[in-house]
Image 1: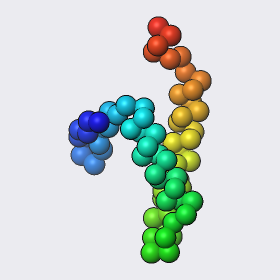
Image 2 (image 1 turned 30 degrees about the horizontal axis):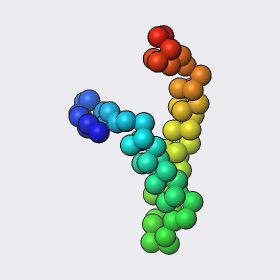
Image 3 (image 1 turned 135 degrees about the horizontal axis):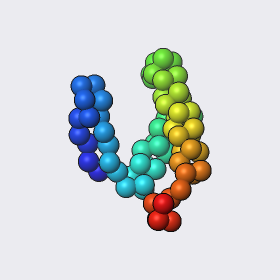
Length: 70
């Protein structure tokens, strides 16, 4: 995994698909079975991020794959 500053306040992450999948799976686990110590606002933000991830993942599934030569 590689992290770099894209601009102030924005980080660009380059990761293997399995690394990113592991982070998303961990986030889903937290969102679905969160400890009572986690503030509701933080959980809502996490759920919004996962919703956006799902939308972007769907968009990516519909796009041509670089493996296909597109």
